[in-house]
Image (tube, rainbow, N blue to C red; front, side, top):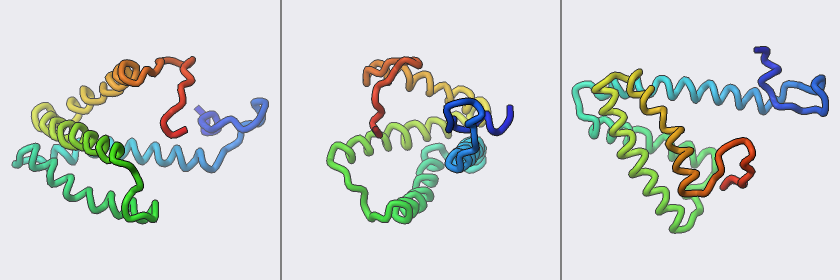
Length: 152
């Protein structure tokens, strides 16, 4: 597949295809994300050797919090995000479900079956997300769905 076939359509006819600078950055970010997600389970497996999954996840959280917070301050230019109580409540629920339960269980899985198997099984979460989004948020699944996203 040629590179230009991966970029955003910017004209009214096929000859109007051109490389959009934002698309280059988006593709680079996508590749970097893929690399980070590919390496994380391997590092989970290496880092959790000889210690429990709960301790490994706690160490990961302690190490990542200052970095994530510093990135937020630099990028957003704010000390604290402006959000109401509901936003903080959902953030807490997300942290407990994703960062505590999900990551701890994933580290357990990498120790028991290895990073490649744990990741292959764990990445089926996308299908679960579709089902839960349809059930709880009323999203229609498929190309005909035009429901507005929370960002729009």
